[in-house]
Image (tube, rainbow over all chains, first blue to last red; front, side, top):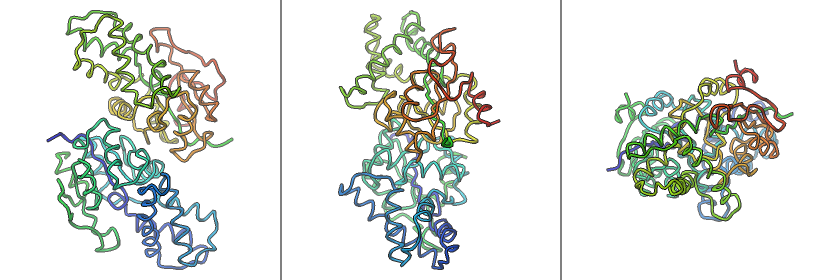
Length: 235
Length: 235
């Protein structure tokens, strides 16, 4: 068994509570304009367009473009669906960057700092580099590098994204461990040769709506990054 | 004038004393094998192959490959030139990673930490991501992202490398400032639309052999990163 040298992290859902943050940001941007809707529903609707938009890239139907670009297309769709076509361009531009202003789950900053004492740490997210940089600044994370979709120019769960992220650190897949709250992400990482760690995020889609246990075989399973750090001998 | 949001750093020569470090690493690897040469000369000879190797990529004669790959080709050339063909493969593999074990000039860690309080900071180096990650770990730097040649898939001073590095942070070139100890690097960055800061490294190529003043117009000029931080109002 190869020694694991790096931990690669999923971000949306695993490290940050996108749903609460997007609801807050959307309310902040739209309620001053007289709009009153279910903000959590808005967050779910926006996120609901996520996989379909990336499928356009994964399938090769459109060239790779950064997640900020896909988020904007998805935002326009959701505003139209909710009969909010009158929201102006400046508001849309501001709102689209809501994904750069997501808050972390409470265990992440301290857990990541502990894990970094023994491993290289990098996001392997579908988010673009600037989005990852902004989330790291906001939440006090110290990444060794920003890896993932933008350097691989494709979207997870395509195997090349995991392999390219490990390779950027001079590692073969078995020397990297993917850390995620989603079984689908971990299944794809394992198929690409990576080790896997599941983090339970029971409230990702609202109270009691999130994966509490993996539905696929994984190497490690923890309730938080702090717990993962303990399992990996990082204090 | 656009506000500068990010500082992009040249690394070899500007942040690290590659010559002293490579001489030390080469001596450490080869002298136990009974080899006794001028180690600084070896470092200069290896570095002397640098621009020519990258020209193969810049010109399109060969596809982009990471600097570790070019360093290895160059090492083989230098060993042959110095009649050291008998150096074995394991030693060559270890020696090639000497570029991952370079020591910083003494002002860099504290200067970079101060600059990071007001700016995004990232390397825009011809070194590959894993090389940059290893240098950051060794020298205690906190980058926001690793940018430069590997994400642009070309080598400085090609303008696309500077522009792609700024763009990865969602910035137009004028919102980024290139920091380097080499006038040629800064001239190319300025031509690509970036702001520029010159750092004097008087001893890069040995005592008294380094650029002490820029030979091209620059926006700022400093004797160290700490001095640059003061000029930019970062304490």
